Image (cartoon, rainbow, N blue to C red; front, side, top):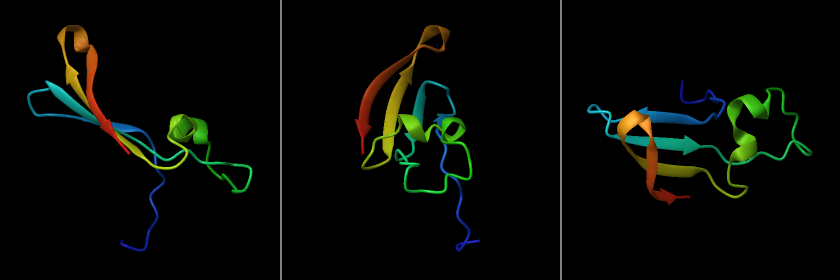
Length: 73
């Protein structure tokens, strides 16, 4: 399993109490020099940071509205 490559895609994980969410956005991929066999629009790699993946913490409020608390590369 360690030798397998998992395609990156944007994903969010809620805390057990559903009051916080951590979201991962993959590194932006440049398809001009890559085969891009999968669609980067579906993996959300076009919205990523060009140099590094991004991890963001959100506070989830009423109506599932998310307020960003911090973000890091």
